[in-house]
Image (spheres, rainbow over the protein chains, first blue to last red):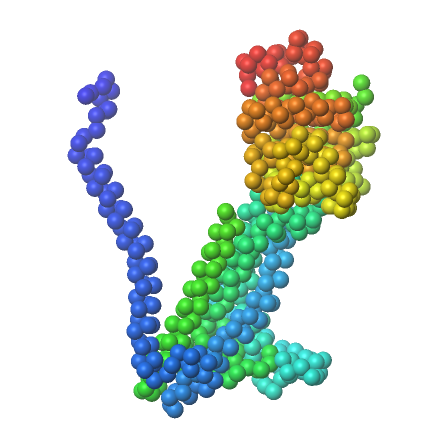
Length: 318
Length: 251
């Protein structure tokens, strides 16, 4: 049908082309999205498959609780590495958490608009610094300070307590790794926690302040309780990032496969173990398989932390 | 007429946009004053300047004075917290705090350390009765407040505001999110409270102003066009814009 203007009728052929293109676009996007799942699946499959030979010689409990790692003697005890991972991560989170939470509260509740617009891009830049640079900074600054100042100070201040005694003269230690990790993950934690605090409705804050509550009372009684599960989600996400962090930790932690006893002992986290050894001395039987099993273990822990985090976040948004 | 809020040469700008222009206004004590006007006329801004909520927004500039009982609340010596204990706010949408019904009402009392133990329970009951909610919630005081209907939550917010014993109640279109029955209930409460409190009500419905207002303020594009006894303005508006608004020609 033609109207007076003559443009009302759409040609049949154009409609067909349009639908065709829509189908192609849809397929392209869905394939791209599916590819990611495929990769995750491929990685897990490969790790499982290549770690299988290990289980014929070593039992799972022995692998996870064994204290000795001597591949040339067929001893594959992962415990020093598991403890190394948890010590450095735990310390990093312990340092980063208060710092990040307080900064995020300041930014979300107290800071003026100008401060926010300045600090937000700075956080993004900090979060984008390659971890090898944090590692270098750790070697050049943190390690010497721990070696010459912090370790002697703590040994003298807490004479009876093993946790603070130093038998390691180098400064490459759990404490150094914890400090570097904390500084690395703090920008990310602050950015996430800031967003989470902003997700608490303004109307709730106003409801509290309308009856004469101060900023701090409003934060304490309304904002923080409302944001708790979201803040926990942020913390878990930060933990899982710290668990997998390889390069910066590897550079300052000392890489000694022994059970750490004090903050000033060196340690050997799982990512560092894999990065340092994979591809070398692969002629040793089961070595490859044991590293794959270690990687699988790390992956499973990080994945479960990520799942926990999204569950906590969903709880807050309900 | 005793005025309890005096607004003098009051100007407010958000960024470079002037939202309130040289407002000069006296609001009488112990009455319901309705601020009317089309969207964007600055009526909510004016309301939020009376409990110093404006300064919570970014990029806001405030000039001029607002006197409550003769004291300029924008004096640098004045703590906004003291003003907000004296001037309550009923918001457009009810925001019940994420806690139980009883704790919502007790919130302000606890914040100010005003009541404990048995006293607290008695106080909560008293204010819930004033808000007309006691009978509906007396058996479920420990339940989370969010389980209440929106209309009940608005009355809960009213009880929470009353509990800190303000002298003035600001109400910012308090019925606009409610169903007609709940809205009527809130209007009823406001009429009952008029004897004890000075109420400033922002509304964009002329009919609500007719039902509630003793005193009327009409605003247009950031300026105060006309104010006076509600009955006088409704029967004989002095200004062309007011006449047009009341007859539904604008707004």
